[in-house]
Length: 202
Image 1 (cartoon, rainbow, N blue to C red):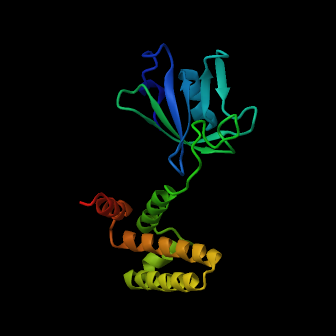
Image 2 (cartoon, one colour):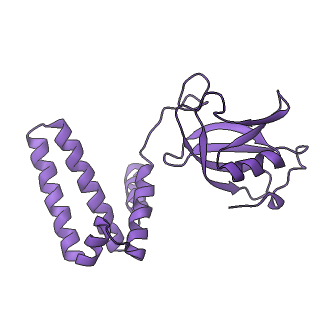
Image 3 (tube, rainbow, N blue to C red):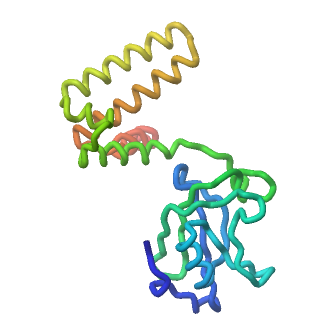
């Protein structure tokens, strides 16, 4: 986690802009300003706190509504004068009741990147009582076999036109595909880049 002394609060007269994104979806939730005290309180309480220019006081998001932004991580930009805050929102972020102050709707598609990263971490650390660890210990052939089994079960669900089972089996298939990619040391981004390449006609 970055420290206050690394940041340039003087550029904007003691304030620094802070862009808050959902740590799971990477979607922008809101933008606010922090002073040194707000930054310190955010770190201390693990709840995103701003400096309200209107009230001329600190303001913890959710202190009235209960819709807190629980801190996950903070990144600074290359000039040390802006912040990107990764948070876990509790309820809607906007006072209007919307997920985001920018009117965007929540989408979990970027969760695949987090899941892929978690699987790679499991491969490296092999924690006990983890199904993913069990797969890696059983080896490549078992992982490949599971991909095949889940693919067949997905096809059967599709043939039966069972929407709930299609969703369940597709989720299983995608998870095991991500495990297979990790075992083969292939990044999910490599697959996405190939799709982008095909779409662009290159």
